Length: 179
Image (cartoon, rainbow, N blue to C red; front, side, top):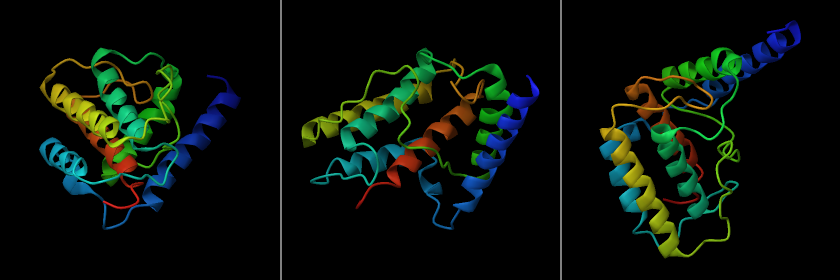
């Protein structure tokens, strides 16, 4: 790694460390850092007449994105950040998220190389199908023993990987206008 890349990476690590800690509150969704509790919560969302997110994507696209993240953890992500990024930015960022018990990330950033999200689907049936897809992915991931390297964090133990997925879901669910 050359000097310029090192300086840029160091700055990114500093931001990755500071941002999640700045946003920590006592109201962290720690109760949903359990697979069964998260699935129960997701099931309850299907009963709501409409789900509106105060974020970049409507509900269908958001739940599809979350399901993709878990599915790629089992089959492999289409694109990866560099090894130096994983070592100097991604890995340390995950460590900070883990210590905080929550994640703060750019919720408008799609998974690199993933199919484009359909932001036109907004009907309740499609939204519930995307929630079901996420639930199936969570259940499947809970049962697997072999995972693939995360595109930004690198290699994670299964328990840490599940925690990363649950924090990722929570970060997006924080954008729900009303639950």
